[in-house]
Every structure is written in structure tokens, then in C-alpha cells.
Length: 196
Picture 1: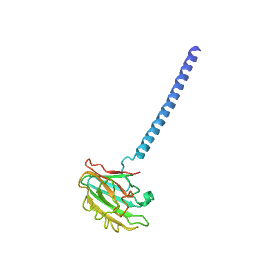
Picture 2: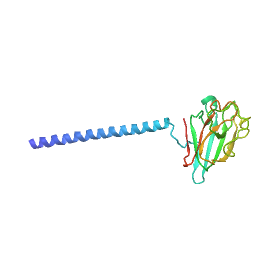
Picture 3: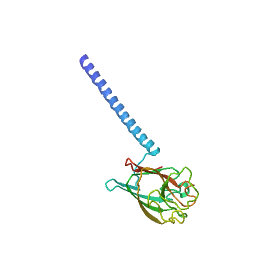
Picture 4: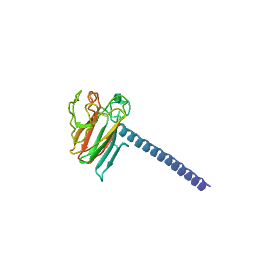
């Protein structure tokens, strides 16, 4: 009888330990999952580079295609590129790739333009004769009439030299008011965007 009681007590103790261990393991798994979700959220909040739905990168063809929409939302009085403005967001393309930008203007009242220019510490209020850093990297009539509301155009250029540049709207007053974002050309072949 004593043997049976001891055996039952031992089995009960093992069962309780096993159940407690399983619960503890389940708790650890939940904590690990929560930590991974938190790290992903922090990375997104920190602005880690991703390939957004408006960007397509073809490594075999060495091309990048982007849909850039000026005034797509109310950010910065609609003076933005896909919601990005004043260094709040950035775009990176690989050196030597052909870049096509399908540019549209969703701002209901203002014309906008797009060009790839040098970085500047301070942007001028007006541009007399803007010259892009890469041939073809500018929309038509960029400093004057630009692309009217609800219209679009396409530009294509080769990102010829690695470096730090800017995507800018040349319409008077727009760049100085923040309608400019960093545009990087990567020698390491990186591509993507940091989207707020």
C-alpha cells in the first residue's frame, strides 16, 4: 500500500511539473512572439527600408519603376511625394539602373513637378533653370507650369553615379516649404524606400 501511495504521489508530482513546464513554455513562446512583433513595429517606426507597393525593382533587367504621386494626402499642405516631404522619408535605387517614374499630381489646386537634384542645405524659393543630376530626371516645365492637377507624365533616366541626391518639386516656393526628400543612389545595389 505504501508502495502504491508513493508511486501515485510521484506520478502526480511528475504530472504537475510537466503541466507547469508546458504552461511556462507556452508563456515563453507568447513572450517571444510579442517581442518579435514589438521589434518589427519599432523597425517600421524607425523607418527601416522596405520595397513599397508603388516601387518595382527588377534585378535581372536592372530597372526600378516607381509610381510617385504629388499631393496624395494632406501631409505638408499636399506638397509631398507619396506622403513624404522635408526629409520625412527617402528613396534608394541601385547605381547604374534605369529608373522610370510615373509621376501624377493628385493635388486638386496646385501644379507640381519632380526632378532629381543635388542635395542642398537650404532650398531656394525659386529656380531659374533647374538642371537634374541625371539626364532625363526632370518633368516638363518643372519650374514654371509643372504638371497640372489630375494630370501625369513619365520620366526615365539612368541613376549614373552613386551618391546622395534629392527628389524635389521646382514650382516656386514648394522646395523651400519642404517638398523635397532624399534620393540615394547605392553603389551596393540597395533599393527601397523609407516611408513614414
